[in-house]
Structure formats: C-alpha cells, structure tokens
Length: 91
Image 1 (cartoon, rainbow, N blue to C red):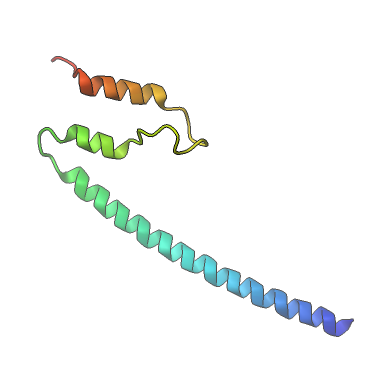
Image 2 (cartoon, helix red, strand yellow; image 1 turned 120 degrees about the horizontal axis):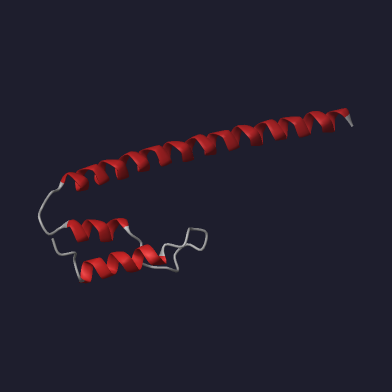
C-alpha cells in the first residue's frame, strides 16, 4: 500500500515532466512559426506596386465559407469586397 503510493507519485511526476517538455517544445514551435509569418506579412505589406491591392486583400481574406464553423459570420463583408472588386468606387 505505501509502496503503491510512492510508485504512483513517481509515475505522475514523470508524466508531468514529459508533459512540460512537450508543452515547451510546442510553444517554441509556435513562436518560431509566428515570427516567420510576421516577417512574411511585413515584407508583403511593404510592397506598394500599383494594382496589387486586390491580390493582398484576397490573400488576407478567406473566401471559403465552410472552413471554420466557430468563426463569426463575415459573409456580408465578403460580398461587399467582391462587389467592390468587380465595380470599384469612382473618384
């Protein structure tokens, strides 16, 4: 009975250490991925070639409505952007 208690504690301690190791690895991967995507985003946002505005908008927008059911409904915004692309505002 007491040796079982010690055995369980050791097992729990080992599992907790493994969990912390996996958690830290995942966090480091997320950090490096976020840094890389931020650098790519900043590099793209610095491009000011005329006529490329809609390509940048299209890259930032997800035009597939079935991708994520948990996100907000952005169908109206999507339709406004598509209609603006087809018939731009006259200045």
